[in-house]
Image (cartoon, rainbow, N blue to C red; front, side, top):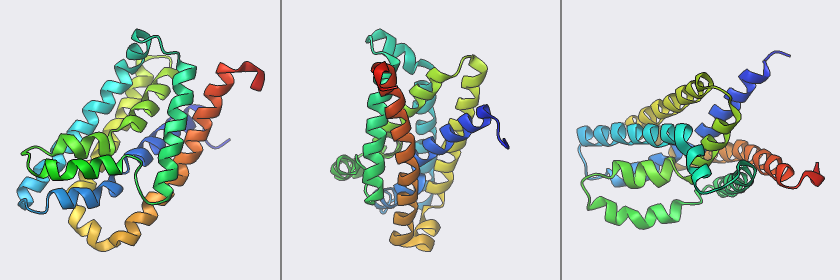
Length: 213
């Protein structure tokens, strides 16, 4: 084998998280919300959005499982539900629309009137939404030590840097790729995400119903 199972695990976690967050898919809404803002203000929004994504997802990585314990939710059940949610998001992405995009669009007019749009709706729910949070909680449960969670945290930071770069370069990227190019990227991410969602769903279901194994 070229890659060790551990390397494959973290690579899959990173790719899955990047696919769910989908920084390129957030560009059209970011440009719309920042249309009347100066370049400096847009860059500030991009930076704050990236930091917000990092904080939300790092929090999910480290204390998400404690929240599940508090509410008495088992990991197999959460894995099954999270896998189903991610699969539905993937299907929506392959139809070139986010599953929570309608909610974001409803918030856009209100957001334009607010001074701070970076956290809501750009960071959450557009990028660091329920799907990304669910994925990280499940993967964090699968690692055994704080060191391994630190590796997951590093992946979150890298994804957040990708968010910052994508939003910071939103205008040239949008002009270069156009609506068609962004839709193609979103569909590819959705395809990768569907495989991860199905795997999470089936593995959780087998734990809940051992007879299926």
